[in-house]
Length: 460
Image 1 (spheres, rainbow, N blue to C red):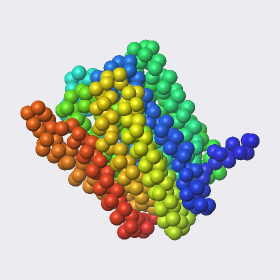
Image 2: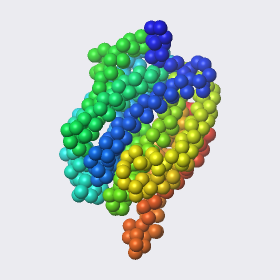
Image 3: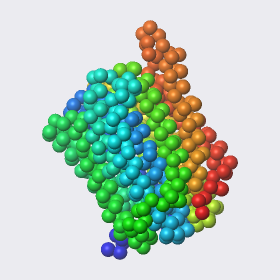
Image 4: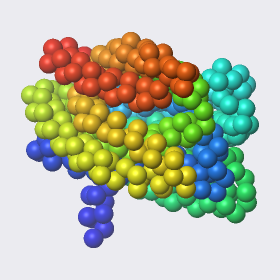
């Protein structure tokens, strides 16, 4: 029994065996983990929506775009580290694997300290720039400030999970995250319903839970001495490894930054429609987070799969896995799309008791539903390109779909639909523009994948 448990938590070598089996085995724990992670924000929204009110729900939602923008640096570091770890693991290069892990840990500490000090000083000016209503300003600022004070927990969890996944271990991260999620839910209810801490309470609960998950990841990595060494000398900054982590990771961070900036800009448009539309957008984005989880999970799985096989010099196997993984991802998203269309109003009713808000949210979610199938293609093939070391192409695709398509389209539709009764235009522009950008993004990604530039980008 003990042997079977150890095998369950062992890292997965994705360079051998049937590609689709390896991809699914790696994706399932990660998918469950991503869903659990999404519960952090979702439980926050449910608790404040039910116990504090719709304005508090709007406050948490208005803080989210800025929160996502803050996290992009760690997304980049995590992606760069994961790509390097997977390729060094595939090529059995212990020394460079150890240096990559150590450099990533050091880089994360420096980035956390910088953001904690700098961003906390500009919270209110940025929120005012985004036209955040005065009625929710204090709640937004408090939520962001508390979250920033505990940013190291979230940062290290994301980075260390990226390292574990690069090594083929998606199950350990799942277990640690499930523990933290349960703690987060308990603290959310206690702080808000029991201690009446409001929006600040959910932020504090999230910070504590994320710190616990990060500590658990550290304990796991310290035990993996058969693969790499986690010694003090490897924690010292290594210019070559730091440069490589940033070279591979920054395009992914920039990609996330572009998406977050687009959300920030569109959030300003959303805020102009008032608290009801803001609250509806919060609910939609929470459900969207769950609906998008399989796509993100398959995308990350394809990054690890491609990285390990590129490191092992098995390019044909990469192509075979890309086809099989994308097909599975599309099928999964098709099922989720059907569920959203059938159960939309029931899902929205979880977040609020306001009937008008439930109907508004369900109708807008119906606009986005089909787009998840397109995103399955984008995430899977982008994952393959990133795993091979080509992180620039997905970045450019993101820039095109968000900066050149999504944002102008949202404001354009709003301007074109202004009337005396609707001085700000139709609020549907927020979600119609997002759907169109997803569909065009999938088409562009398929073209870039077939062109094959990614095949020449391995770090070895």
